[in-house]
Length: 255
Ligand SMILES: C[S@@+](CC[C@H](N)C(=O)[O-])C[C@H]1O[C@@H](n2cnc3c(N)ncnc32)[C@H](O)[C@@H]1O
Image (cartoon, rainbow, N blue to C red; front, side, top):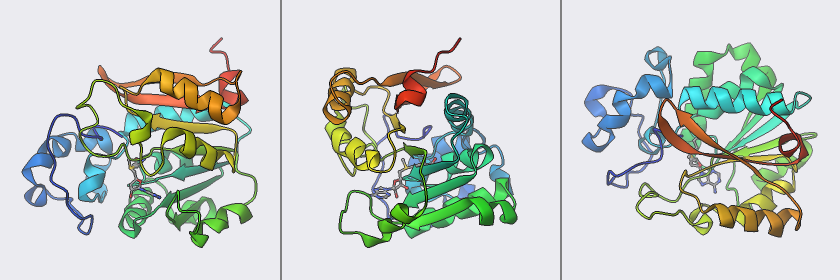
């Protein structure tokens, strides 16, 4: 995400009811993201649609490509991946190239519409009909019956999530506390994802407290469990941490 998650700029809270895809409608505080639009989506000019929030939340294309390929490389037999918090489809689009089935979940219909629109720029509609399921659901709300579909969708190999980092000023404190993640603190988020697969990948802020990640790992997966963490750069810019749980990732050796 992330030319994505904001750096030092104060953003005004704006409802995500509008598509902002022309220079004339981009508010001043989003101009720096507009300048990076081809890093977010190389094919931006083919009709990419983003809301206010997505401008600073979407995963830059190079990072999304790397993430999808690395996951597939570690776990070549994987067929089905869930893209929890799919946003504008930055990750979904690249997962569609690597996996047979992609289930994108978001609680904003406008964002699911953006994911579909943006995926159609990169894949033809036949591929999307065969491979993509988009689900409007409120993750973390156990009462939300719309999420029951996940129980009926066959084996899920990987749960991926690029959760909201709790607002634009995630770097305002030196260390990011895992309890600031939305909609659930890290341990609860892992627990909720583990119900569907033990292979979990999360994209977290670059300044996340590593000790807390280890602590949440032991709490959820047991004392001797492991997490693999990679720093993710686009060019020289550190965008965040990719964190991997599950044997497929932790036993993978670069050799
Ligand atoms: C950081 S963005 C994801 C960006 C995405 N990976 C991309 O590349 O476009 C987080 C998304 O989570 C969604 N979201 C926030 N809370 C949610 C919840 N409780 N359940 C499902 N989606 C949620 C937001 O609407 C937003 O689209």
